[in-house]
Image 1 (cartoon, rainbow, N blue to C red):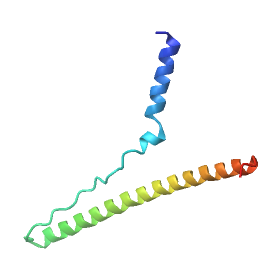
Image 2: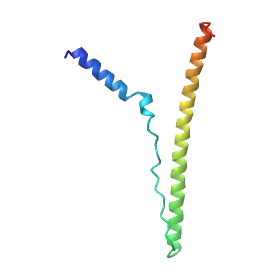
Image 3: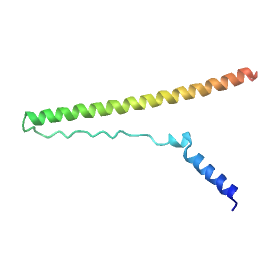
Image 4: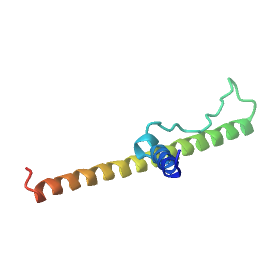
Amino acid sequence: MTNKWIAGLLTLIVAAMTSPAVADTLALSHTCTQPYKPDQFIDNEQVAMFNESVAEFKQCIASFAEQQHEAAALHRRAANEAIDAWNRFVEDNGLN
């Protein structure tokens, strides 16, 4: 094998691994920890700790959801920009 052939193959592999289409094939899931609620609370301190855990879980879920909404907005904007580029191309070249 020649060095050019190996370099070309490596370039192709790296390009395939970093492709945006490949990157978005997996959906993320949250890593938030759901609090455990005992059948019966022993004292007010345990209730307070549970309530704090619930608040942390809620904040974690809200933060994850917000990150996903922001990512979706970026994808929508990129898709719209691509459509706009196509529409300009069609109009500029009299293809409509």
